Length: 327
Image 1 (cartoon, rainbow, N blue to C red):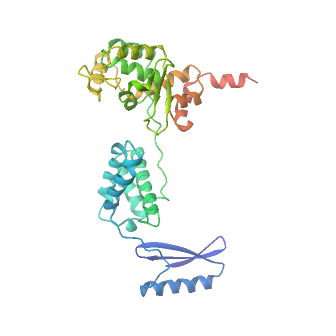
Image 2 (cartoon, rainbow, N blue to C red; image 1 turned 180 degrees about the vertical axis):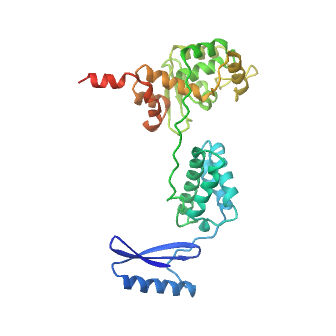
Image 3 (tube, one colour; image 1 turned 90 degrees about the horizontal axis):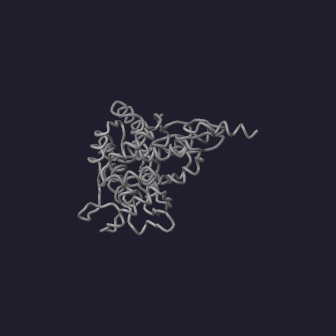
């Protein structure tokens, strides 16, 4: 418990019910000392009524509520995101009440995780914990967020693996009829894998050469234009369509995974260090190299913010030259 001065005003700092409380008193140090003594006495006599009492709830119990009532409702990828993060957090914070977890404890968690993984994963863990506390405050189960003072760790630049034109020709030239149309769509629309395999025929408008995506990662509708390669690939599939879904097996069941076929194809053509999401990066990088404005690329990719799209800016060799040439 202490009295301290900041910006011309005195504050009192004390703990009650496992929580740290700071109160602004005013310019009088004497008054601050008197109020602090009064708070001490009230706490000792268990009659401190000025502090809002929040229920004691264990971290693991709140984590369950958070997943059920927030993550599953607001995050389609909650299993890959929140669930994984919470399983990590529970190993460190289970058994503790939300009100007991301090910024110091979280810093120790960060230090421990630093020995196990990279900064990006740690940042995802901390972001999840911060969001949990924000919801706990909203729901009246916590009155402060100990994650707020924690700063994000510096992350390495994102993965930048793009296919060359020669690699694209090789990839499509050796792909079988099962996955070739999927690869064509990925390389020519920038659609995510989940968006592709969940695509239904009613979302494909051949008359307007547009694919309508309503169930996207960020929750916003996206209209994806089809070039001639995508148009032809989908038209050929439509001729033998036996399901509402565009991409199906011969028995009519929806294709859910092509990882094995994709991996075997890469081994066959001797292309390494490539995953399916890199096809989306390839789509974006080819556009930028051809001088397409970054904001247009952003719209095609479905990025809400230009920040994500800026990772491709260095691929445009002529935009700076063209800019100064205008002078």
